[in-house]
Each structure stands twice: as structure tokens, then as C-alpha cells.
Length: 279
Image 1 (cartoon, one colour):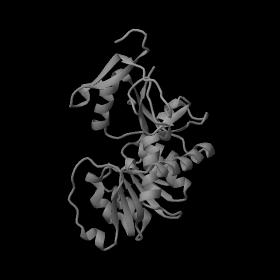
Image 2 (tube, rainbow, N blue to C red):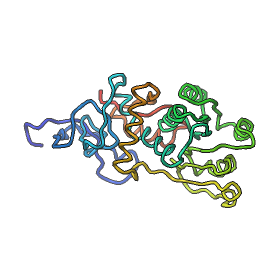
Image 3 (cartoon, rainbow, N blue to C red):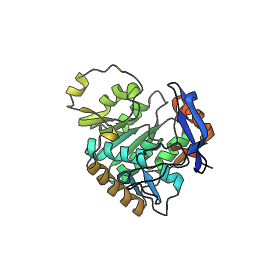
């Protein structure tokens, strides 16, 4: 490394593999911003140089002002979770005030974002979580009701709660496990919005016919720049008003990044948004 360069710690990957290929280096050159790469107090939806580092570059159209009322930990929890949640609800599901939404896996970063946005937009919000702590956090962040998806009869409890009409929209974090149940929970014209899946599942297409329901996938980075601007405007309002309040979950130092990835894969249930710390 040439002398005179400012150096930083950053995670680098030099080969394919599991979390063990994430390597911490302390001699990485600090990236230098060029035109249209800001240095303000902001949060971002993507970076140019990589986010697992003490410094990162981002293009100006991917960064947004971070209000003083939110700290940098909360700022780190906004970008992908809240923009994904907003796209799922408003763009893909086209929700209307008064409709019902079930957030399957509501205690994680995206799930809690969905709960907050859905409640702010006038929906009846139901959530599922796998722990008592997770259930409490879901209720504290916009859900009217919460169910333990580890109970064998939790689907029956949801059906009893919503009645014969069913649920208008289901935001699904684990489609390979839940999609069959989702299709049976929907109202006529209901929509399952697939945000996450970890494998295949066999379904009965006829289950979509009787209710004329839809299964819609969501990929945040299919959004146009104009759509990102729309989502940002709505979310900025949420920060100003106060309904957008990120919940921080597990926190890891850069040295523990491999462990963080292991825990994402093998954990029994998320509570809030996992973040990396630079201290």
C-alpha cells in the first residue's frame, strides 16, 4: 500500500464460499468521493464501494437525509428494509386504507417496517413471530394482533380472528414454508406478496382460482429512480411525523461479520434489524 493514503478497516471477499470467506482487512484505502457522491449526514439504499467498511461511497441519487432525531444505527436500518416494505405494500399489493394485511415473519427488519407503514396507511395489521419477545415488538410497532407461528394451530387462530372474508394482503418472508397456508387465508382477490423464500414449495394452483388471488414477487432493485424518489418522499414524511422508527436487533463488530451471517442463516427468528458496528 502506498504511503500517505488514509487507510480503513473493511471486509473483503476473494473467493466463493460460506461466511468464512468474509475477511477483515485493516489496510484498505479510504475511498475518495467524486462529483455526485455526497458526504452529508445521510442513509443509503446502496453503495458503490461496499457497506461492510468504515467508509463507503454512494451515488447521490441513492442517499437521503437522515433526520437528527434518528441516530446512525437507526439510519443503517432504514434503506433496504423500509424501501422494500413500501414497495411491497404500495407498489405491488396496491393496498387501500381499511384492508387487512398479515405480515408473516413480522419481527425482522422488513416485517417491522411493513407493520409501521401499514398502520400509518390505515390498514388492519396482523403479524406472526416465533418468540414472546418478537410478538411484543410486533405489537409495539403497529400490529393490531400477533400470532406465534410456532404453535401448531396458529393458522386456525388467524382464521378465527379474520372471519370468513379472509385477509386481503399477506406479506410473506418465507414463502417456501408458508405459501400453501397463505393461499387458504386470502380473501377473494387477495394478494400474497413474496418478499423472501429459501427454497421450493408445491402448491395447488386451483387455490388461486377459486378466490382469483395473486402471488406477486418483490425485488427492490427493480424499482426505477423515480420510484425510489416516491418511496423516499413517503418515508421521509414518516421520519418527520414519527411513525418510522427503526428497531435495532443484534449488533456485531466488523470482526464478527462471519458470525452475523451464520446467525442470519441459522437463527430461530429475527428481532429487529441486524447491523454492523464500526467502533
